[in-house]
Amino acid sequence: MAMLFLSGLAMASYFLALCYMLMTFISVSKLYATRHKNASMSRTTQLLLMTISLGCLFRTATFTTLCFLDFQHTDASLSPLSGRFQVPDDTPHAEESDLSFYNKVVAVLFNLPDYLFVSAYLLVVLLWAETFQSSRRHWFSADQFHRKWMVFYLIFNGGLYLTQVVLYGLLFLKEDGAIAGIFDNDAGTRLALIPLLIFYTVAASDLALPAIILGTWMYLSVTLSGFPYKSVHAKAKLSKVGRVALVWSLGRILYSVMILLTFTKGWFNTEKDTVSMQSMLLVALFVLAEITPIYSLLDSDLLMMLSTDEYLPLGDK
Image 1 (cartoon, rainbow, N blue to C red):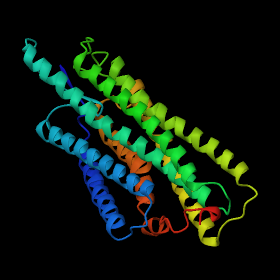
Image 2: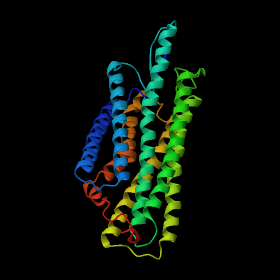
Image 3: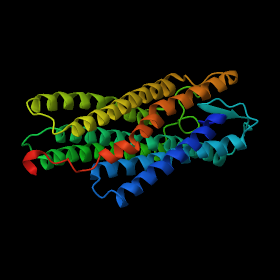
Image 4: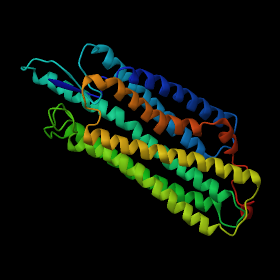
């Protein structure tokens, strides 16, 4: 028996591929509009839209690949996390290597957008912090505040992507005896160490950022507590961006917890008669944890508010 990673998702892969294709189109359209029609849009917002566009594009590629997989193995008894199909016991080593390589590619293709969405989430945090800081009348330097956050963003992203490259390199280059390239047991209910570390890294990053938001909120609340809001518009803008940051935080926490349970406990590795329910749960997870936060950020009214007209504090004008 050979195992294919993330096969047998039934109509879930088709639906999610279409959803992310639509979100890619919308995010690219918004990015184009901000770059050509709203020159005052902040660099943080433009970078955020670019990151989201890339993440949605890779998600589309992932689920499109799974669509082709399901089309080729429609008669196989496949479970959502790992599908099995009959192969001869004397399968040539070259074919085993192809299966191992295929599973690793699908695992990377599924995981790569996670890193992009972690970066996008960090940019949402940065956008919220900038909005909080610029909503009050004070004499602190907005440019210095922005530079400090960008340094943190670059260091965090640099460490994240360096870890990603190292783990991906180990996944493809290190021979660790994993079954079908990525599994730790014959049933396909547990991932091997390196694939598991790849998903753990994303989950740890997602779960750490809400703590950073909380710490930043406490710091800014104390620092700017004696300064009034610039205007009703500035207060409304902060409230709207704050709601978006909250939606993203809840979404990333939900996604990280479910991914950890899925790939460490084998929650999606059950019998074929529950495939429909599992597919529905998978769709619900992506809709609630990623698509809804993305859609909340692409709101036209919000993007109109995210101009730099009121970015600089009173002392910098």
